[in-house]
Image 1: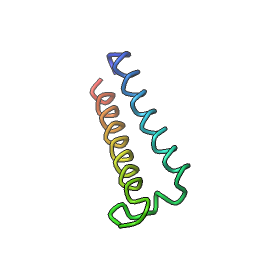
Image 2: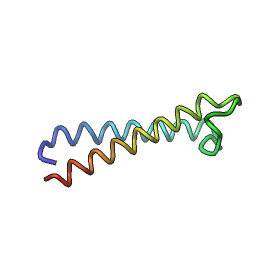
Image 3: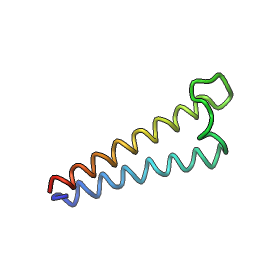
Length: 70
């Protein structure tokens, strides 16, 4: 990536998403296999986990695309 500050910022964002994912998985074991659409006590956390994982994947794909353009 041509802009080291941008790369640093994007990688920090990816690290934050990964920390959020890890924290949710530690605090709610088995959450990753829970149905986020279900009506169970951890449905909200399961939806958060799916959202964080999708955001992290999108961000990492964006970073990879920027690196390919160099």
